[in-house]
Length: 137
Image (tube, rainbow, N blue to C red; front, side, top):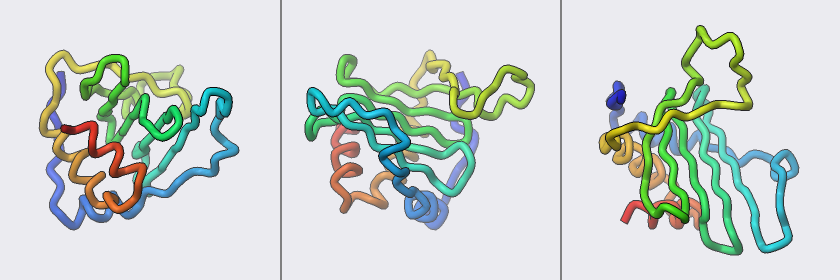
């Protein structure tokens, strides 16, 4: 378990939220049958992205990664789960940037959950982020 090792002030949180840019949809493998779709946002900072998988208009899976930490939610489990990615592991010779792995935390990192929520709130006027914020209730 690794507790969040960084504290961000309000302006840093705003900057991270504003930096998220939607990635071109044709890059993502889509399953249009059954009403499933994926949305991917990348931030300006390395190792900062947000993925959403929707079934019609409802989120079925969500993953947020920042600085080697991860927060995910899956409709099957209905709980927020924190973890650590291998993205900052410079000694992993087999690392390929498009295939990060996540080791789930034994104890949920509540500070990281609060940070993620704060970043998402900077974009709460957008439907996709508003729906993600509902998962924190």
